[in-house]
Image 1 (cartoon, rainbow, N blue to C red):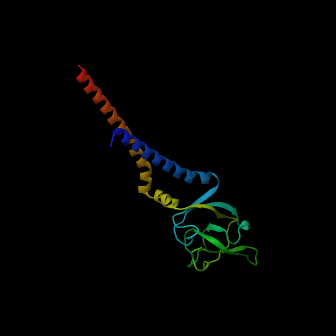
Image 2: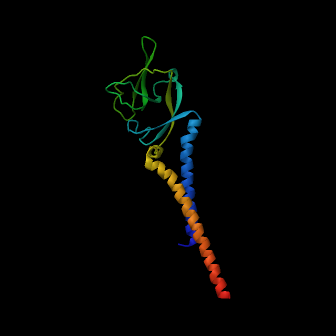
Image 3: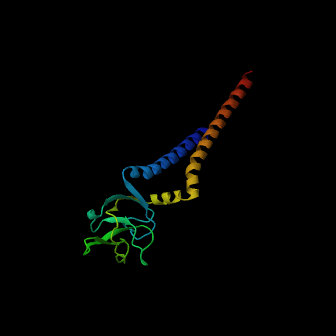
Length: 186
């Protein structure tokens, strides 16, 4: 492999890595700046609509705007049957209780039956899914690990160091060639 080809390949790889890092940063920061909340889907209960490993972008909306069919992310009630983490499921039913509160039951699209719990939002706002990106959640999850964060900072540093070394090596080769040419002409 020639030096020019190695140099071009190195520049291409480093550019692609930097573009990927900037794209990931954009996916992380831009939605938050626009008022969206981001969540990584970790289970298969919405498979077919939103697969595990996807990132969902939720907009905060009034509970009164929610209707059957909307997909929401919420903390289920603290019961023996409900998970302790956030859930992203489709609204299966919305009803008004006798005291005028809203009661919501959800269902994962890949589940056979609705969730066994029904919940009454404690706040006037909930998050409704507006968009999702498949597979990006795996990268976000990896960023929550020490190894993942190290890679995000180490890879660009290593690429920069390799680029500098390649430049030094190239310059040393040019200087050596000039020295040989000078020695041959004298």
